[in-house]
Length: 208
Image (cartoon, rainbow, N blue to C red; front, side, top):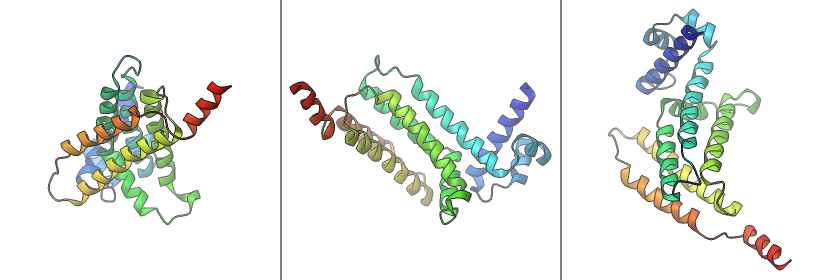
């Protein structure tokens, strides 16, 4: 069992390296096999197809992101630090080869019917993990659904845009300042008083 797990880890690591170096389409199973030192027959035994390898790469990145967020206690740590953990963890996640491969899969399969579209499975898994991490860090805050949705959109559309820009650039951009600005904006959104339906429900409850 230990050897089997070690082999899986070698293939996943090799796949991440190949995707980062060659891109998703050019990260062939032959290259992954050569990089990992595992035969194609061995890879088929553990994964079956290239899509299954990519799914394992993506799951590996998402599990690490969720584990990082779980290390923070929402009751004992400051909101500022929790926002920092979320932004920096999500940024690391979105720069992992698994997420880069996910973006390529999304674009290459965007016209396929939903029943045959592997990108939809990946997107559903990413959404579940992000919501789980978000709820762990911020779920106890007394926020309206509108505030929660706005904060999530600000966080992940900003980070997604930065990833897309970095993929199109030939240099290595420095995003330290934009990440600080994003943290400041999220802190303001999450610190604001409740707005919208949640506040109205509270008033009705108090009146009753």
